[in-house]
Length: 195
Image 1 (tube, helix red, strand yellow):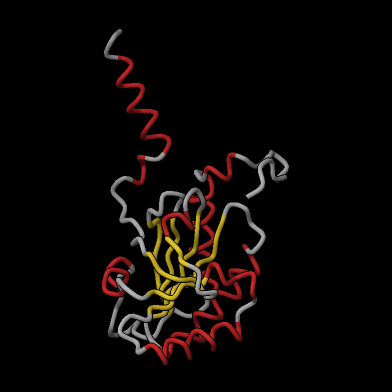
Image 2 (cartoon, rainbow, N blue to C red):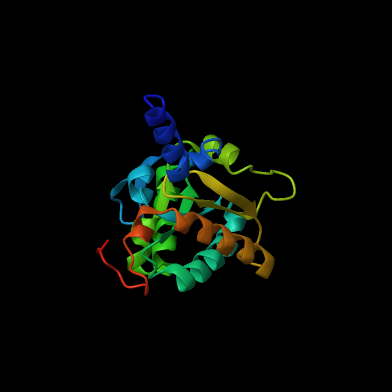
């Protein structure tokens, strides 16, 4: 009977989150949001599912914006999900980075500013985690769905398409099903705890 306790604890641990233990984790970044405020991606995404959109080239900015607009229209009010846009600016001269930030601010609604990040360091790590393809997918937006522990459940790249959107939505439902925020929502979808 004394061996039953550790076995039950292990089983409970696997059911509560260990199922994704072998998955890759989204890289942690200490950076700035579009307002210039400091951000830790781990804290920002803690406890909720998210779709992360990253554009590694200038040519990917328009398709990334299209994804961001579409996903915000679907999940902007969703307590279980965040839409995070990441703009790598590593090795970009300061005056050009300021131009980029101003340009992005002009086309981004203010309520999204905390979820648009200017990534100053770690570009190579993000490319590796998102399986960046410098050939065919060089100018694509790269997307990933992460769970409440920032485990990457799905990743892909490309412009908006019904197929890609379907993959994202299916994986988001999977991620949200285990989100601690999801547990705080009533049966009829009403919020029990404010975010």
